[in-house]
Image (tube, rainbow, N blue to C red; front, side, top):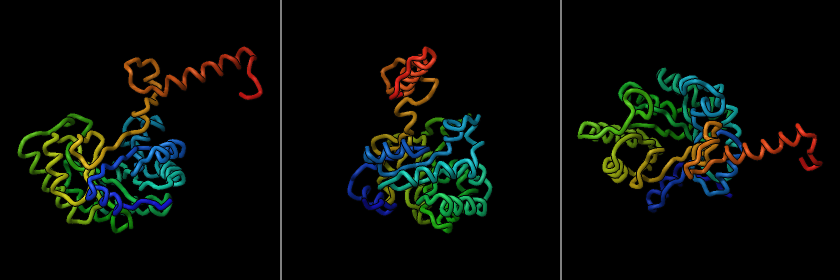
Length: 259
């Protein structure tokens, strides 16, 4: 099966097809998402919290992420593989961005790197070029934060003008696609309609060119959701029930040859 490229994702937009993206951290979920037909696999820096138990997303490092990026690349069959640049290199200037991007390319074999420049576009824009100079497709994240005191949807003409300015600057710089966060649906639609490159996001409305789904959130794979009973998928409850039965059988000395 031929591997997709960023050009293929751009062609999907041209053809009016939505891009399905999934945040994954390891081989097995990669294989599951590939079988389900995913177009873009994103190795998120959220793995620091969701997999490594780190307290804050900013704690995740390039060294932390490379083994997971390698596992996703090993598992991919068709999809483009992107990796999030962790906060520290992303906010440390173009040289640090370039060094991190080169490591992800050379040591993990990813295709694309996402760099978060939200609210600091003027200061961090050179990092977009640094990603491309390292040999990866650039996938900047713009808009407004999803965490912290300034989180939430930003409305009004100032927010709209800000997003439009930087979306077009990113496209003109040669980026492959954009992750846009926390703008209202009408602004999302305007940005998408004015650009050649795809615009997607985790909170993207249907006006977007596609959507990102964090796989562990979509299936409910968190220890904290075991007791959730709200009708949403709850893989952790299924795993808990199965493992509780296995552990109880072992404690009782009742396991069989197949266990």
